[in-house]
Image 1: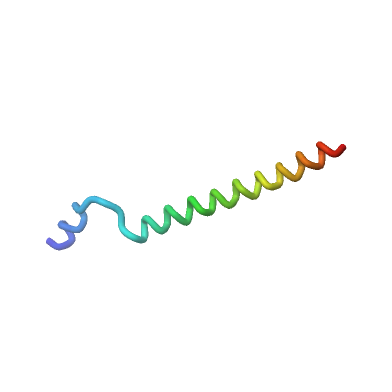
Image 2: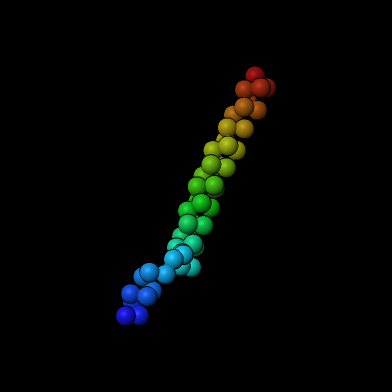
Length: 48
């Protein structure tokens, strides 16, 4: 019966929130890396 009460409880667990935050951080770091590379290439083409 304890299991049934836990399953019906709404909300997210701490692990789920940490996983989502880590995925968002990973995606953000990848996007920022690509933006930095694009900025460097734009500067190089501006000087040419």
